Length: 358
Ligand code: FNR
Image (cartoon, rainbow, N blue to C red; front, side, top):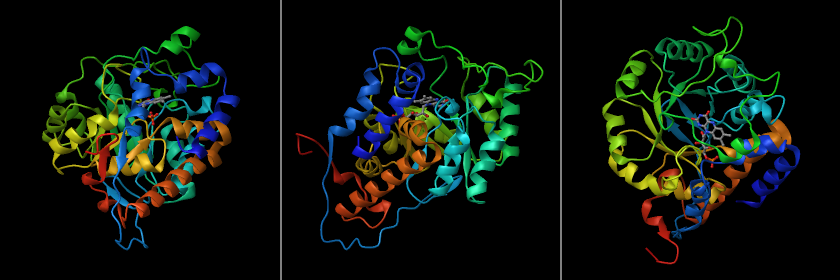
């Protein structure tokens, strides 16, 4: 982890309730994948090119649903008000100020319309995307999609890797199952079948299939990203079913503890997709060098989850801004060191496996 991020992590750990710290930090099972997401980046090295004249560097990336000033966006994570009273509002403002996207979680503790309003208060053109867990009741899913559309979200991110809840050992040990009084998953308020004025529980849907995705896509004009793809065959199916982009992700090691590190799954997905839609990566990105490696392996941009939560807990909006600034500066520096002028100059031949030279 870059030293600036490590410092924010230490501050976050010091201020957070230990139960909430473990909810954010923890993974599923023995936390093998949690560790591997970061470790896999350490096993990769960059082979810089020289004498390329890289004074003026352009870090911007165009994606369906947003133009990013820097190829780092905020991955969807739940319950930001456990970290800071301003919660997702603070995260949205910091992301907008950095010229990037917040993927606002369906399980946010601030309603999506207020999240978008916070981002637009900073930059009227700010893009916020909405992450969706399709619900077993498709009417509920449809209401959530309408809510995101009405709020002004610029894309949907459908999470596909969670047919059931991940089993988080740390949460089980602490008996952490419910939000503290006063906090709720605000997007789940006033939905069909829910208590009037109250919130419905978020459910996972083991029955979800490609047909559900087709119906979802047909129901909205928003670009649809599919998050949680690891198998190249699923990437091909996703393209065939018309998604606008794919997110290679193992949910930050929080769903299945038997899968590869996210960055290890990336190249095969990129090859299978063959440029037809953009591919994002999240999981274990802890510095600008990791961003460069992921882009060289074919990611159009990366998402960061926990580092943003550490920034939020440590210093609210300013802390998130600091995380995004650190990643931007480090990435720009690494790009210069690699002789790159833009993200397109980061190609796969620049990545080698440490200790092997290939
Ligand atoms: C997540 N993630 C997640 N993903 C999603 O699609 N919906 C969600 O509600 C959540 N919630 C969530 C909570 C917490 C506390 C964490 C840490 C993660 C997964 C997230 O989008 C992303 O895939 C990972 O966080 C990326 O890994 P890093 O950057 O945390 O290593």
